[in-house]
Length: 209
Image (cartoon, rainbow, N blue to C red; front, side, top):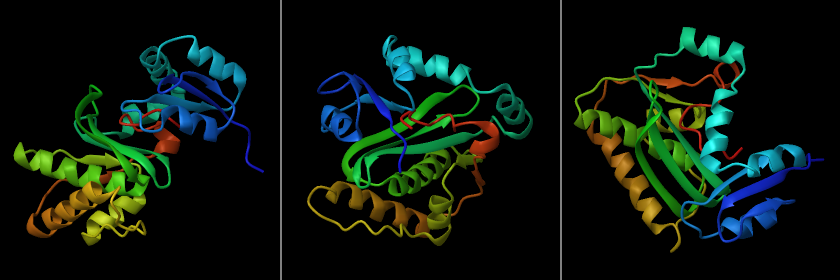
């Protein structure tokens, strides 16, 4: 049996603390720039909702366990980009972004798209990062926490089971462009696996888990 979760919506069609994903989904569906996250207890949810979304994120990022911060400091190349995607449902509203690891500065962000999957977002984020760095003649490495997306990029094919339709037409155009880019370009940037267990969440994480 799945464990009970509570959902905080800071910004959406309706804000507050919700007892189910279905309620949360209705509160954020179609709302551009919605801010929300799940919690394991009502106490955590109430504490998070008592501050702004950005204040919560700041405090949350600063509360990474010390052993993870130490491992991150020893093992991560901070002169790098890192990418992540977030999807509200599978399929559902999806967005992705890229962040400079040393400063957490957001370098690009796409979406939300009305119907996508997390794997598609992770794939597009890596390709976007490769193209972004190529334009700047930069050889910085790229971190991702998705082994699936790394495999798709290596094969130059977004191997999604999602079927094209009117809702995701724009997204499939981006997928096609990404695949063409991979076939027509070479790159020297390393694509590295972010070790979430040892280092904590990837900095580009949207904070909705």
